[in-house]
Length: 225
Length: 405
Image 1 (cartoon, rainbow over the protein chains, first blue to last red):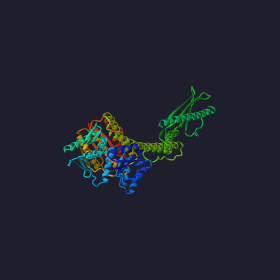
Image 2 (image 1 turned 45 degrees about the vertical axis):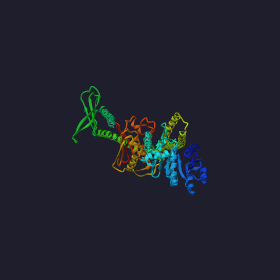
Image 3 (image 1 turned 90 degrees about the vertical axis):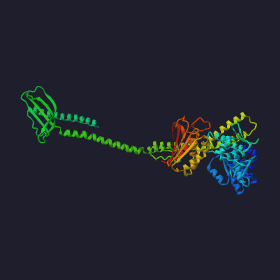
Image 4 (image 1 turned 60 degrees about the vertical axis):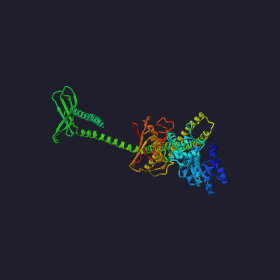
């Protein structure tokens, strides 16, 4: 995927880029509205990660410009303001998703992938990792072509793992991904553990490998290393 | 007043008696003169209203004597006893014959006068007093009216409302001064409040980006394969604190948004549906903890409020009931037209129930809890004039939200 990160905070944009590059994406960075408009005029991106509060204007401008030029890039809005109006406005004028700062890079990665799949529906609604195959449209997963009987949360967890494969993802990011902001519970880490344990068991009973590695009680890494 | 009347009566009586006595004495002296000079008893027919008796004795009186006396004399016409004041005056003529002059003067008129004076004067005073009190009250209430209006306005001043304080016009310099002080004070309070509110919101927003950077850097840092276990432990603890800071900031941002009236759009929503969705959201968590959740709804509980706030309200209440529950406990939700009750099992409350709705109050020693949940609930409830109360009996905790009265 070719991505454009529009963010005035360079420390943040660099981390985003570094994380997404591991996944094999191509990342470019624009620091302000001018650069962003310049880059989007010249290049086509699969997805644009767009901060709304830019020093020289609103990120909404970029979306308007894209739509005016009939470009089909996916747009993920980043905002420091968790405002419903901003969100609705952004989605109305053509953004695909909205993420409020501060977010986890794993979550950002999952959102970008989901936008990408939606934009490229032809045969792209499948993700896979070795013997594991997931159909994101039917929300089903197979191991060695055997259908897994997963709960909704287990399915979401599996997709989250595959998209963020080979990287350590923290328990916090899993909690926020699975339950969102609304359900923030103190002992939710136990529920993550329970879900991970069940998912691992379900994959391994049908002959899948144990890809989920626990990293010092900090998080997990989905990897075949 | 009565005592005053009595005193007045006796004072005037004394004066009247003195006058009567004097005039009686003078008359007696005139008569004496006449007797002494002419040796005749004067003709008294002219002396009206007085009864004068002069008796000439054949013998000498040893001593000149004057004495006064109150007497009652039967009046034949009226058939009644009338009171008289009398003087008994005796002396001797040159030829050593004694004479006794007794003059009676009626006291009826004087007593009448006395009666009237002692009755009328106090009642006049009383009515004067009443009139002056009334007048004073009227004048002062009129005069102090602007003052009381000002006091009332100041007492009812709501810093949350953008309506400026309305103080009455007045010609009284002191009140005008007071009003201008109240006005400038409330203006200052309001602007300080707005500044503070704005600052809170801006601060909370500005913290979001650095927090995002910290999070992103932590996410990147853990990818580093060269990190050993000790370093990862440090990162883990940084990560936990960052998450806490994030939740804290989120809570404060929400409170500041409620304060700033961000959630103004209202519509008819069913609290029953919201709580059903919410229970569903928490289903797996409650299942893992073995908590039994019951919902008893006798009504759809449709109220008019902001949808987001209704979600936050219910989910905070329920999350609270889940969080402070015990394994294999239960949550009982009861919903009606006018109230919502959530009862849950849990450990006994260590803290004072009064502080439960305060910001940063923590119900347990859980380091992950930031202590904003119930203060947000309270904030939303206050915003919609709902009443939230907490009661607990042994290990049962109950939060009751009354939204219709």
